Amino acid sequence: MLKTLLYMFGVMSLVCAGIVFYFSAEKWSQFAVNNEPIPKESIIEKFKQLDNLQAQNDKEVVSPLVKQSGEYALIINPPAPPKPKEEPKELIKPREFQLPRTSPKFKILATSCNRTRPEDSIALISEPGRGEHWVKVGDPIGRFVLEKIEHGSIIYRYGNQSSEMAVETKPPVRIAQERKP
Image (tube, rainbow, N blue to C red):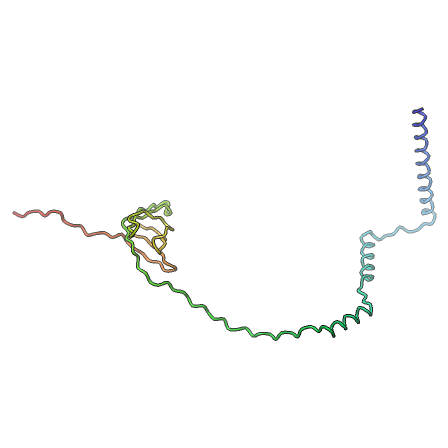
């Protein structure tokens, strides 16, 4: 029974394929008999022509009723008059803010400079209220910021003003004197 059904299905498939083949051959023969020229336009040219036609059809068509209602809206609610152009005002230059001149309240006692890596240099300072302590480049010292450490001196900054301070050295003191005979 199953074999018979499969045979019938196969025969029906062949018959359908034959029908499709027959109609295809008939269309082909009609084309060959009429000797119609094969179109030489590419699909891109056809697409451009369709696009041009669509652009012509899409032109904005305003009905007279819509046009009249727009004119009536302008009568009822007119647009605001244009603002007069303002002349540019002269720009007032802001005053430059200058920090008050202050004197440092710290003393530099010693420096330790690293020539290969200057960012590792440190300085020993004595600051009132904090005592003696080590600082490095970028550390705040009161209102000042340490900018650079050199051999025997430092450069500090307050605002945009930079100043330099050297290590205070005391003159050598003679401890003993030699007696003359």
